[in-house]
Structure formats: C-alpha cells, structure tokens
Amino acid sequence: MKGKREKGGTRAQPRANPGGAAEAPTAADGEHAATPTAADPLPIRHLEFLGGLATAGGWRPPGDLPEVAFSGRSNVGKSSLLNKLVRRKAFARVSKTPGRTREINFFSVNQAFVLVDLPGYGFARVSKERKSEWGGLIEGYLRENPRLRGVVQLLDARHEPTDDDLSMFSLLGDIGVPTLVVMTKIDKLSAKERSAQLTALARRCGVDEDQVIPCSAVTGEGRDDLAASLAALLAAPPDDEG
Ligand code: GDP
Image 1 (cartoon, rainbow, N blue to C red):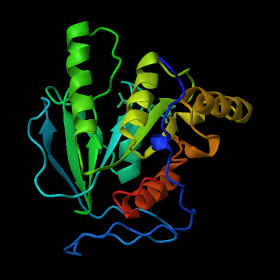
Image 2 (cartoon, helix red, strand yellow):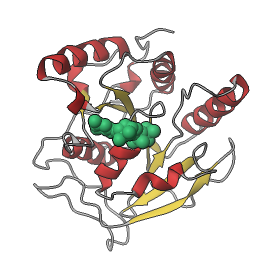
Image 3 (cartoon, rainbow, N blue to C red):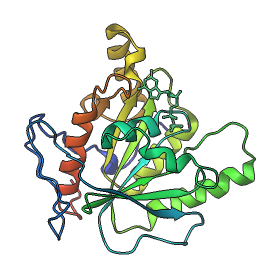
C-alpha cells in the first residue's frame, strides 16, 4: 500500500484562524444554529442521535444536511475526541453500545450538520470475512454520498500509521473528499517527540505537516483548532474541489 496519494483530493481544508474567522454553518430554522464566537468556533447547542447504518445501502438519515465523518482504527481515541469536540462526557458512548460498534452512527449537531461516527477498523481479532464486510460498509458510505463534505481521519500520535490507515488515505484520495488529519493522544509525547512524529506521520500519509491537527482528549488541546477547521469545511461550497 502506498503512503502517498496520487490525487490531491485529500488535502485538508485550510485551518481557520483561532479566534473564529471561520463562518458558522447555518441551520435553516435558526433555533439551534450556533454562532461561532472568539471563544468557541463551534458552539454546540443541540445534539441528537439519529440512528445507525448497519449494511451498505441501508438506512440513511432523512433530510439533506451536510455530513462530516470521523474515521480511525479502534482505540485511536475517536470516542474521547468526539466527546471533547461536542463537550459532552458520554456523547460517543452510543456508538460503543452492543450492536452499534459495527454500525455507522449518525448524530445531528445544532441541526446544521450530521456528525458521522464510522466504526473503528483494524481490530485484530476479527475474521477476514468480517473485515471485508466492514470495509464494504465504510467504503460504500464514503463513495456514494453526495452529502459528505469531509472526513476527519484520526491517527495515534505514538504509532506508525497501520496498513489500514494507509488504505484509508488511499481511499480518501481516490474519492477526493476533503480530509482533516488529527493526531490523537498528543499529551503522551514530549515536545521533541511530537515535532519529529508530526513530520514522520505527515510524510508517511502524504499530507503537509500544517494540515495535521494535534489533539488531546486529556488536556483538551486541539479541540478549538479542530472545531474551527470543521466550521470552515462546512462553510465551504459543497463542490469546491479546492
Ligand atoms: P476509540 O476506540 O477510538 O473510540 O478510542 P477511545 O476514545 O475509547 O480511547 C481508547 C483509549 O485511549 C482509552 O483508554 C482512552 O482513555 C485513551 N485515550 C483516548 N484519547 C486519549 C488522549 O487524548 N490522551 C490519552 N493519554 N489517552 C487517550
């Protein structure tokens, strides 16, 4: 599997200025639309679990809100980061309940966009058959989805990207969907380790270093940076090829 993408499609969106230069996604009814402030580029006013997609071609949320999907291998810290992002302690717990761990779970945020929690991939004790089932579900969702405005791809700051991570980058490049890259668990690295690892991970995955957002669900570092990038992604015109 190649680490470099052949197409330019997975470039991260420019990260918005901390301080809130990014425009907010607006909700039609206004009631739950949240206006970004200098303090919080993505204030969360309303959250709702919409449902899960268990098989390719199955249920999808009604309506046409834009979707942003979060992807990463299991244990990368996706649930913890999502909880931090929406400032709820147990928001992502629903995706970890029995029966839901293998689903794609959809949440409405501020009734302005849909946050999509993709099932964690790469779990070691899973049969090949099951793996390809999951792969089909995730790939089917990503490929056939005009509502998809971006993907947030998570990588563990401490580890080399796995083959599954690299396959994911390759797929995202092939689809050409805007991608934000988050380095999770950054608190586990020293300042020196972190800059070396940032360089290494970015190179390995074929993205620019300044397109990688270091985050920690423990210290909260990176939450607002990620929130601002998401707001910018959602404010960009849907068919913007960048
Ligand atoms: P998921 O399987 O990707 O949803 O990962 P979880 O959010 O459940 O996290 C997996 C493990 O990593 C848990 O033990 C978390 O407490 C830990 N973890 C998650 N995020 C961080 C982080 O930012 N820093 C540290 N030190 N640990 C984290």
